[in-house]
Length: 116
Image 1: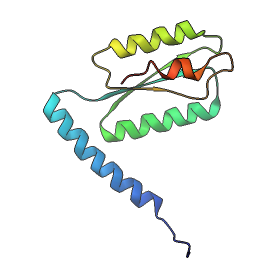
Image 2: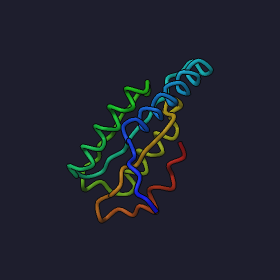
Image 3: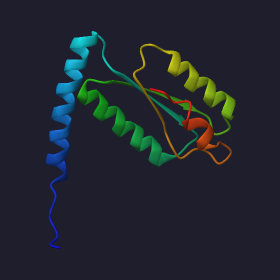
């Protein structure tokens, strides 16, 4: 099998162009701008860079992007409470729970409640 060079930027731009079209159509149909919310627990510089990148891309696509930062010592109840609040918020169209989580939190417990 021969190696093939892939132009990642041009592929990504094609995807972004299609997403912009779909988001514009969604906004026309619903009269609402999509809202994506990220929940981040703890302190991890790599995740913070990733969140900034998500924010930049979302904004360029016409998506409102919000994030909530919970401290390292947040317990599962506190994270679940925030996730349930976001699930109940009719403005929110998508929720991302940023992984990895601090070691005292169980992803299996916290990922399942995300229903957007």
